[in-house]
Length: 299
Length: 182
Image 1: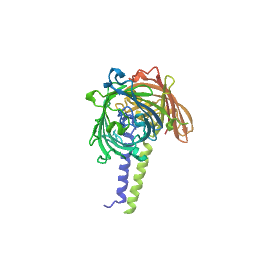
Image 2: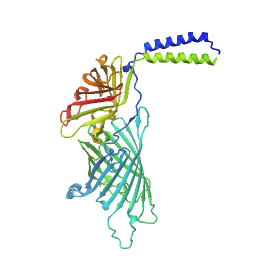
Image 3: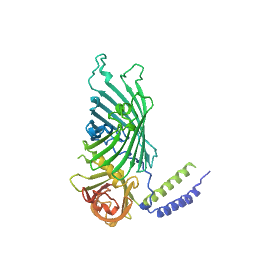
Image 4: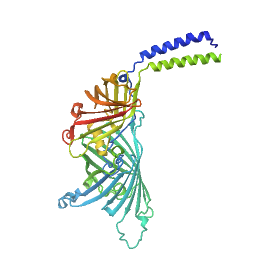
């Protein structure tokens, strides 16, 4: 199309007029502006980093040190003579630290088999709504357990490396509103040493955990681990409990059929049977300390 | 033909220029700071949000502030969780905002450096509850860049926020400080 000089002026005039009238109508109204959708990452799927014995999807915050005392009494079936298990105790003392928002590490020492354990938990995906919708969160937890109990056998002299067990866990979790959260935890174990040659070194199990909010400060929790291939003579771990929050603490009170509190011990080597009353009362106490303040508070 | 197109483009550009000169000037930031302190006892209960979205119009004085409640950072992670989960119910009410006017915007000369007192009237919405707020602050102009500072107090209970520690470990009134550079 040819545009001649004659035509240009009227066109330009009309366009300019349009724009001016447009500008006149263009009085800014900030109140009428629409909100952009903003990605909202779901938090507090579980109340603390453990459901009962096992890991939850939660990490401790960056720069936060979490001192955890896990305590299990003896079996209810021991009867009145040992005050229904209260005479006995099994413990794990642990220190967890948040290196970043997505990575935490922890160490622990258990009275059971005089175990030392170390773990890392890494958040891979987060559940979110708004700008980006994603239906669940995913973390990986890797644990290494060292049994330091002295070897009493005279016939077998195990290597030092035989004392190690490894656990790899993928944690899938979803929070359904404020009142209910569900978690699936497929787990793979590797034993460096097993007791007989025809036993496999690797074991698979799947955990299912949930949290139900009862009030603002009290939550009901359940945790069950199903063993796909299993060591004979042991039972699946099942625990029910309550999470109770106060200012700087989270108390977890529960009943479980497991004695040990490291992954290998409670998932694979639970000796108690619920039906026979081989269950124990236990509690976890968590106290958090701010070791490194968020950068907003550093001066 | 080329020449005439150039001419057209030039006139159009002129038109656009006149259009932008006629539009109202909006100052905005996405990195404003809002700090609050609600310490009631020994334990410090304070948080800061450095991602405050704020805008104001030079001609009308209309202004807005908006924050994501989850964007408030506490020194203590557990406190932050409780803040979001038990007090602010952040998944239900993800945003807090203020909509109002700088009532004396005409007294500010944006071309001249200096510190001007401002009064702001409007409506503050927190936890889904709106209340009228009126406060004073200052606007500093430095090389055409305005910076607003202000402080005011709100009653936590006025916003339907409940909890047994309010009025005890948590102060009944939260002191809010704003610092936004546009």
